Image 1 (cartoon, rainbow, N blue to C red):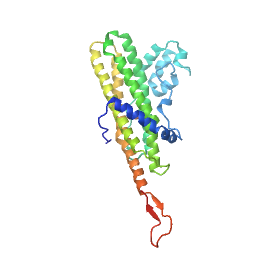
Image 2: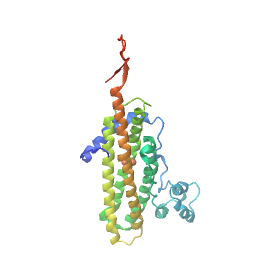
Image 3: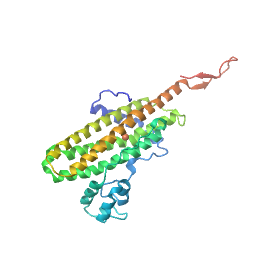
Image 4: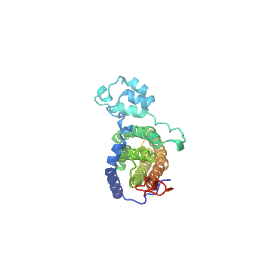
Length: 297
Ligand SMILES: [Fe+2]
Ligand SMILES: [Fe+2]
């Protein structure tokens, strides 16, 4: 299990993340010598910049909707229609939440392999679902001003922003640092004194996951109230999407906190042990039978 980061206020968290990001920036850039694929580099979905091919690749079930609407070719939705909000809503309604990831034995994979799985299986679908649910929630709130006081759209926007910052930071700092530490523990690059960074990574991830879990629970709580006062069928679509997203976040956080971070901590401990026991040649004369190596502190 991950280390308990102890209590922290939002102000503490901000300071931790800021200081840590600055300290890690240089070594993270070095670790990205062979660039890691990130989920932020994929084309945006459920925006005016979306293309049919990208939408259908991620959500095959929307192909029929595109065909019916006459949205085809490689043009973007914005090029196809000057005001595509209505088409985005139809596509967001037709798309289904991604299926749960297949079970896998993670005991034998390397840190880079696990990170690649997290990006492809969780970060990328999460970004897409935040876009899709955002379209549905904004449309619902615009059509139902009677629910303005519960600020469903405001809470959903905050959730999306918090989660996006979290996964952006993981891909920019935490993951490259994790890969660099594993490489150093294998002797594939120069060892780095990373213990403080690893502790900060644990705190960053734990705080981000707690915040995201709290916000999505509040969102789901609001959606339990709204159906009693609204017959809008989009509430069922939004609820289905949020439930699936919440279930995936549990698995996603488990992989990061209970598999990835302990592996990084272990690699960091290996580096520390290696530094303590590193052997160095003895200079000068020596008596016969003496070892030609000595433990270096
Ligand atoms: Fe993540
Ligand atoms: Fe995370």
